[in-house]
Length: 128
Image (cartoon, rainbow, N blue to C red; front, side):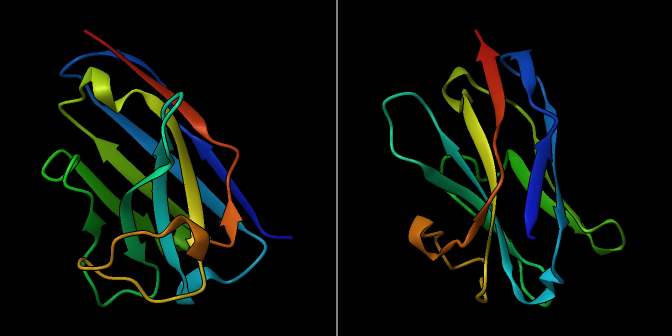
């Protein structure tokens, strides 16, 4: 059974940092695009970062987070990370880890419908 388990959310003040983790289990995720999405109340779920687990390509970042968020992976731990810095109140949302059985790159905006597996989400709250 495929499982994605996020952790690392919390409450911070504007300008602060958080690192989200997503532990993957239940399948070999090397040939997948790992993505981070977020959803604020009343808004659509937005893809903020994506990285091909098999390597060989750069990460995708939404314009809203480019230069502030960094996605990385540790294949030995089957874990992907989202390092978030210079956080803003508008970054407040539930953050979800997801996996898609496709290739992705820095020029590949994330499409929610492409992602087959999802975590339960972790809340990030940024206060001003």
